[in-house]
Image 1 (tube, rainbow, N blue to C red):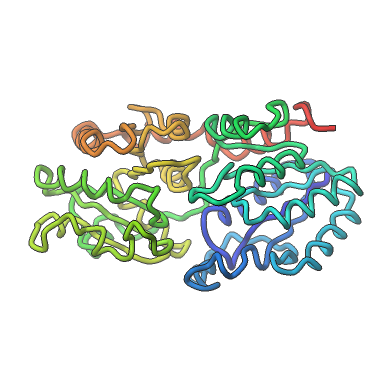
Image 2: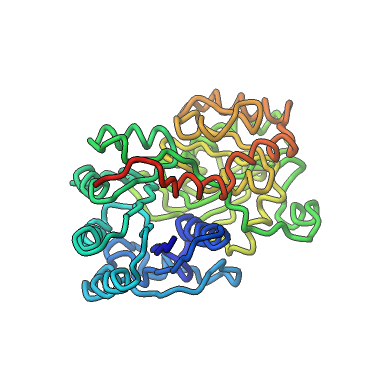
Length: 388
């Protein structure tokens, strides 16, 4: 079977890049597949990058997971859309796989999908990371539905996303509800855990928040819950690793504003450590290695890359009980769930973990469900119904 995969890759950064890189590896490893890789070289218009183009570039990582392919597609140059279609037409691919991340990509993918359907026999498989964007956008629902209807099959990562696609009006028989696989490409450092903790000023137990800081990820909630907990557990630190995605009206300008609920002399401040920057790929394993648990206090979510990194490194998770997280966090087995947005319940679950921790062995057994081989099998289900 001949497959073309289009996605983002190094030098861009973020979870979608890691996902696409690992998917490429998983497809290459599967017998009987002939896979060609195509990449964006400009995936977004400049106005979407509040900090400039460099805000989406990974200039820190020497470990990139990159595989050879053609960097061909530019959002702002329709000639590149035509060039990619020409390669797909001449390649006579059985399947073309790409990603739906944000409705901003509607013009490019709609033109490309329409041409593929009109002039080739290639089937279009669309991996949907978000049915709708996290921030409201005019016309997002109609653009998403239009793209979904142009694909032959869409692949979603949770039943809540499947329900949202149905609510948009998409035909149920043309979708596959899968899962987000583990991100197991990150490396655990050889340096002793205690040495790393000491160098960062961390205490005996470490709670980790990891990833871009955006309002919907609920970091403020976690900081409030930790303040309630910290005085009773002086040997616990909260480690926050990630940069602010952008400046927002919610006031997420810097770490000082995130701690504005604490007085300047509050001793809890000494139990909170910020790594306020984008972390290079080779460093990711360092922060998960020293953590006892990942905390994902999201207020809304369709999936979470940090949860799947945690599982890959056998780390338990405390997460909000959003539908997407109820599918990937087993309460009492791989972690604990708390009532979304509820500071008191989050505090109680943090305390429950400290008093009754989930072991790494429990997580290791549980994470086998989220392997890439199983994901690829679901992605390529040739017996599933397809659009005619």
